[in-house]
Image (cartoon, rainbow, N blue to C red; front, side, top):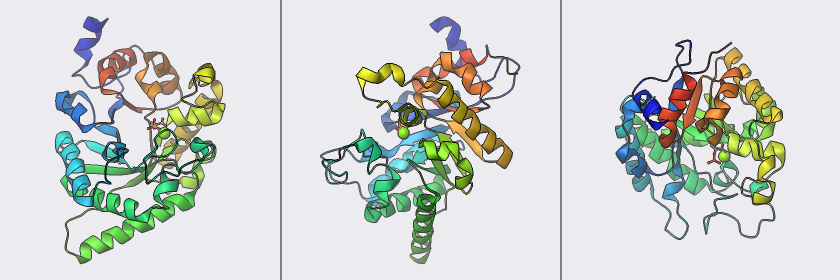
Length: 293
Ligand code: PEP
Ligand code: MG
């Protein structure tokens, strides 16, 4: 099978009818890129910025973050690089940042809920991102958005950051501000977030919240099925809404890396997927077998 898939690696991703799929990658550690040819994908669809905020290490300052983000953009050249703002809390605790003793961490202070309470941390990250944006095609993605007010507050913070950088004569660019669609409230009513520059569906969290089955709970793993009709219907709803409104929609959850789910995602209307680097050839080979209706 490997031999059959390998030739797909350096071809653009296409469906069986030749239509183009935008195939991006998910990255958690910048080191992963060292062994990866940017020619094998259309860009980075999800850079998880948590690697900079390891438990037990001091918080990274603006300069450290700027250098790390810039390296990603240098790797990608002209291709888009979507960096997600800090998504800790829930399954990703960081001492000194995430609250201790939450009874339901996945329903608690995580992602943007937390960074909006730590404006010092959020501002430093947005400053580093706005500075790095001068070196490539950078987009900022905000995790765990539930209300439009959270995106508004983030946008105001980014405006403030842009004004401060301009005042100080620091080179910077305002990147588009998009959101993860991973809270059911947003997947059901995406029109409330029409201001987002783009949507990226986080099927890992969307599935756990729709199915009421914790993503780390082995005892209910069978319930956490991203191909359940309820989850797929929400994915299709968001894809349709995006198409009607001209908002680009991708999916960056783990299901996009699994060939068995691809036909359903294409049928749901998605044409942009973000997958694990190790699955690029496998996903391209599987997409080539799909005849869209
Ligand atoms: C998701 O929730 O599907 C996602 C891509 O983000 P993470 O797995 O980092 O929560
Ligand atoms: Mg998530």
